[in-house]
Amino acid sequence: MSLPPGFLDELRTRTSLSQVVGRKVVWDMKKSQQGKGDMWAPCPFHQEKTASFHVDDKKGYYYCFGCHAKGDAISFVRETENVSFMEAIEILAREAGMQMPARDPKAQEKADRRSQLVQVMEQAVQYFRLQLQTTQGAPARDYLERRGLKEEAQARWDIGFAPAARRALLGHFKDKGVDEALVVAAGLAIKPDDGGAAYDRFRGRIIFPIRDGRGRAISLGGRAPDPKARAKYLNGPET
Ligand SMILES: [Zn+2]
Image (cartoon, rainbow, N blue to C red; front, side):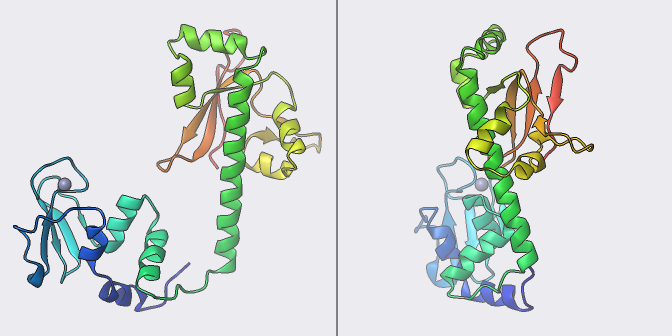
């Protein structure tokens, strides 16, 4: 989505940085000079007791003299809410009572597809998690224990197990009514070029989710607990 010219300028004019920042910090009223738009607070980006985080409300910029974090209202929302540039603009525009421009339908479609893939990925992670607790998963659990990855670590990293079957995950998704093409697109199954039936990419493997900065599973790593396996490690493509 692209923004019309002047949109960001108007958003900046309508946005009070001290108001946006004020929700996340406690101002040091002794050091601040509110009338001048000169505000100080303990920094929200690093641990401190003194106020070295400065907001220049007139210019709309902040700067931390401790950790050197700096930026404007958009970057502040991005950092503190952990959202993208566009999402930060949406949040600020809503608060400023500004109408967001209509989304480009192609970009919308792409975003929808991406969120579908993320969902399929997460469902696969949960499915593999459950399989690790089954009888079939016992050798994988033993292997992990021997490597010092106890139950707590397995839960923390969402480590799972892919059964040694061609259509275990695909069967699970079929029961849930998930389109097979989506499972293939997520890199969780392989569809042979010769038109044969699709099959699970990960079979008889311990599964390690690979997550992005926002905690979304973007790929999976599979490790064969059996040392005689052809490929010890197998990584899925990134979605
Ligand atoms: Zn700081």
